[in-house]
Length: 114
Length: 114
Image (cartoon, rainbow over all chains, first blue to last red):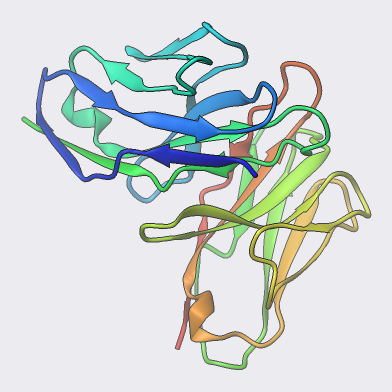
């Protein structure tokens, strides 16, 4: 079955530091890959996604590249802000008959200090 | 356009009590999902629906029932609540189809079972 493994947190950074959150996956075929973000007290919202190998998703300064050869989708940001403090979830959905069900990683809590 | 809404936002139950959580979406989405979020576990799929009048089991369906009598609503029921069902519950919906595989989440319902 499908699975997602992401680095466990918590991750604590100072403002303007570089961020990497690792995510690797196991899936059949060519899944779509997602990063969702959950701000305190809120639901999840899509941060970025990629649907095929070598695609790069980007949003709000965050980037992630779909690497089929390493089955990875690592999240990066060059300079984090206090407002980026949140829980980040890597997820995938398999095409063809999966009914778009998402498989999530366990989440990584990021805290950015001023 | 309210997106995905959930009712109630908070609820406290005693063991053995029953309740229904309501999810509503105004985006005319076909697919709807119920997840639970527990610390260190990520999000786990309880039940889902691929269209009005249909429901299917997810990863952790035991102790829950669902109904999708109207396309815009997806109800999650607990017939006899147990402390193990203390969690945050999220509803999500998706249009489906090519390029329409992003799930939209509600704000969540925090349920405590004493």
